[in-house]
Image (cartoon, rainbow over all chains, first blue to last red; front, side, top):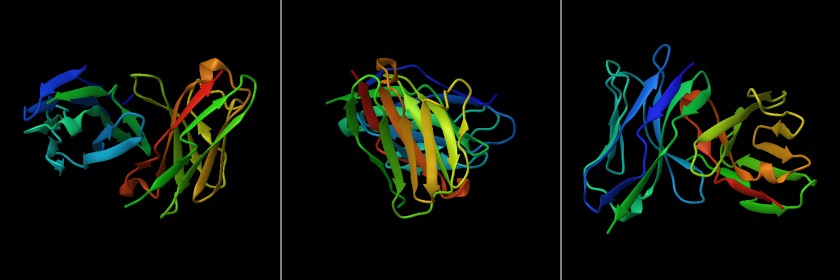
Length: 110
Length: 115
């Protein structure tokens, strides 16, 4: 079945460092891809999405490009802040269901 | 934007009792709602999909008699954990969708602790 694989965390960075969180997927067809963020004790918030190959989703300085050839949707940010500390989930839409990766904890130190 | 309200945000109950968790879409009609369970430091596990006016569809391995889902209106779905036991303690999250084209909005989650 369809699945999502994320890099294991935690990822610990200093403020203003460059962030990459890798995400690859396995799917039949061409699913929509998402990044969600979860702050401690809260539900998930949609960070960005891409619905077709070569689409770039972006929001709050975060970006991810839908790469069909490498089946990837890596999350990047040029300069992280302490407030970006959270858990990040990559997901794909399979039918009407979201399939999530395991999540990557990001810790940003000041 | 779309808002999903989940209530309560946390609940402690005694073993053997039942607990109801509500999920409401505040500014849109949700034809489909989803219930997830999240264990500490783990991803979300889809428990069931509910469609307004019909029976919920449960994922493999989820006990439908233990986790009762009702989606009586286009803005409200409830999850009732029946005869709760300590192993049911978890973080439960709902999400709602007006249609898959509009994306999915998540509630803030409910921390259930069974003692």
